Length: 265
Image (tube, rainbow, N blue to C red; front, side, top):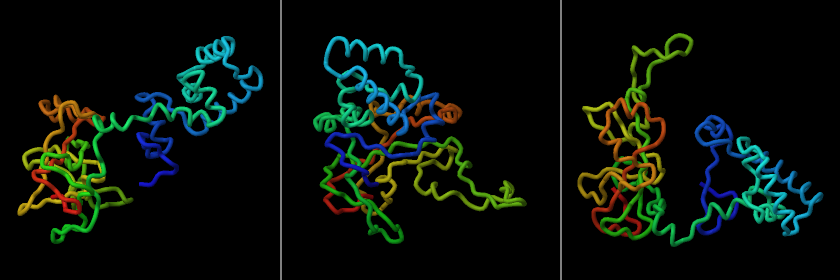
C-alpha cells in the first residue's frame, strides 16, 4: 500500500474502494462526498468570496451560518461544505476537502493509548518448510505483546466457499463439488461447526502455524476493542448469519519475547 501524498503524523490513512462502495452503503453511512462534490463546493466558495468577501465580521459569520442552515446535508454537495467559518476561509486556499484534514488527525499520545500497531510484522519467505510466505517481526515484541490484530470476517456457513464444476452455459453444477476457495486456508473454524472466522488484515494473513516452536497464540480481542462484540460469542449461528457488519476480532499475542527479524508462528 502506497500513499498518494504526504500524510502528517497522526493522520488517518484511507484506502480507496471506489465511489460505488459508498453509493451501495449510503443508507448506513449517509451521503459521503466525492471528489466532484468538493470541486463544486470550491466553486461555490469562490463565488461567495467574490460577492460577500471573507472578512471576519459578524455579518459574514451570520451569512455563513445561513448557508450552513439552508444547505441540504442529505446530499453529497451539502455534506462537502466546510464545517465552520474558519474552515470555510481555509478552504479558499487549500480546498474544501483539505479543510477536513485536522478532523482526521490524532495526537501521537492518543495513538499510543488507543491505537493498534499494524506494522509489528512484515512479510517474507517463511522458514517453515513448504509454508511459502511468513510474518517476521519488524521490531522487538515482548512476551504478552501484540503481534498483530485480527478483525474477523465471519461466515456462518462454510459451504459459501465451495467451488463447483461448471455445467452448461457456464452455470455452476452444485452436484459436483470440486474444492474450496483458497480463502479457507486463512480462516479459523471447528470440524463440528459450520462457522468460519477469517482475519482480514494483511499482516495476520502471513502468520503460519508451527507445532514445534510456536511463539504466538490466538486470543479473543479485549471487550473494548472497536468492532468486537463479545456478546456475539454467546449467540447462535442463526444470529451470526443475520449480521452483515464486522463484529468479532482476535489478537495474535506473543507467548515469549520475539526478536526483530524472527518469524512469528
